[in-house]
Length: 245
Length: 249
Image (cartoon, chains in turn blue, red):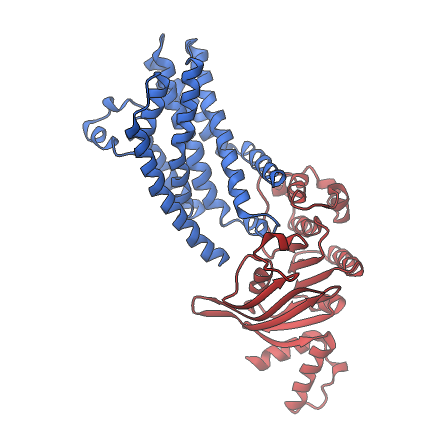
């Protein structure tokens, strides 16, 4: 079991790392965005690492949403997926491998932002804060991975890219990943509290600031996990019935 | 020992019944060819046997077990009708990925050499020609040293030399006690390889038996249709299948 899981993870990592359409927007673009827009907000001081956490969240969002969203939309219709179902391996193994790959890419993408921030400001987060930030990044990514799956099971490979981009950019902006929520237009600021990205950014910022987490943010993320989980499960069952029933 | 058994299998897609009460079995050491026009139900039957679909009624068994249970698929190698590989991977990497699913897989180098792909081991799968892709798909079916090969139009798109080369591999597989379930539109392939033939049309079995049995069925039909000149010796398998299908329309 471990052998097949490892092989699928390695194959997935090889495939994605050779795919600029995936690596550029997920790994390079958030660091570039941080350089262009985020680094200006904390030029000399301690705010740069805090701003970097927002862009790291944006990076992890890109990885999980595109990996599970667009990736699922493409893979579920691919002939290879059908062939892989004839191999002596449980389909759950392939999903587990996909999750490991997403975590690996998420860590790389987030680390790239923090390294960029460190290089330009010379200031980084203390190790304990950094560790809590990574917990918040990965824990808060769960509903977005499920949201990606829900999207991937409901869209065609072509439309998935467009829909994922619209949702990803809208939720990133309105949730305060690029601009602090108090700097957003009033109408958007009022809506931000209902968005999963807002609560994700809150748990990441409080971790980076060395403050205790607010339970309300985690509860909101848990709620979104249930909502997206139900949608993902429903999409999975419908797809299974259509393609493998 | 029966490799594949299908008993009274029915499969529906919405209002369309793709398979009506289909029964067949593939004994160990035998080649069973499924023939019929497009839409006959061949690929649907293959998908039930390989566990990628489930029957609405009836029973399909793979080595006595449910094909949906991945443990019963350890002894099976599959060539699907529609071929595709994981993008951006090399030929060798694809073979190595499939190898990890089996306890005693064939060696990658030897397998690629057997199927004329030794020089393409480092090639990106996207750069392979359609014939090379087909050969790689067939090579993947042999990776696990299977007891049963399920081949859905394995020679479509192959040139004559490659097709003959594959026939040799299939004969060697049978010689070693393996079994094959084959779908094809090339009836000379059936005559060259198959021990048993099942003619499917609109999801129903029109005729089943040896190549001679199927020809005899068609010849019998010709006599019934006042064509006394038609005997088993004078009818090709293609004529026989065509006649059976025309009579069923």
